[in-house]
Length: 266
Image 1: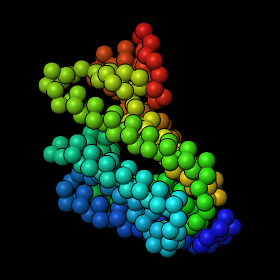
Image 2 (image 1 turned 90 degrees about the vertical axis):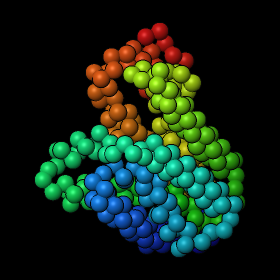
Image 3 (image 1 turned 30 degrees about the horizontal axis):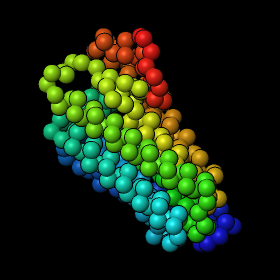
């Protein structure tokens, strides 16, 4: 499909294949989680679930222009970095406590229930997040100023998130920091700079899709931002951290939750 007038109806016919790709990979991940008794395995597959949908679109909507190249390269860089980092971070630590809580709430037969409570849900969300690629891979329109802004924002987001993750990993690796609150580097400006970088990445990819007429794919960055702020990100991680780490309360008082900004006095 080429040109700004690509049929929205035709894209709707292709979209289910993206869902099928994400769901198929989620099924594989679920089988592995049952064998390992570790539902948090889905976190390692998260970026791949999005990539699976995007790959399906790339195969069915083979746009070969610069937009498709940029979007594909940015997705690959984001997905590989995140998958490698999460796999390295979680290696040898067993099931994450968030998933342990989900497991405890859904006994008996959590192994089967996790198929739809965790893995099918993640596949569905990944499919929604991947919608910019449905639009971007369908239209071979020339790049413009909005595309340049989108690419720059996505590159910034990937880099910002990578730096934040690296700083946190280095902080945790030092035994002297055990029990302390990370408030250095980018974490001095935001309590969740990695999430801020993640949001920037998806808003940037959406801007690239807009250049192909994909303004309607705004559902992707909106969904990602809501997840990061209200569902599986800030709210969930900070639900009881003030009780486990009293010093974190002062950190909350002086530091923005999301958007980096000069810290206050607490």
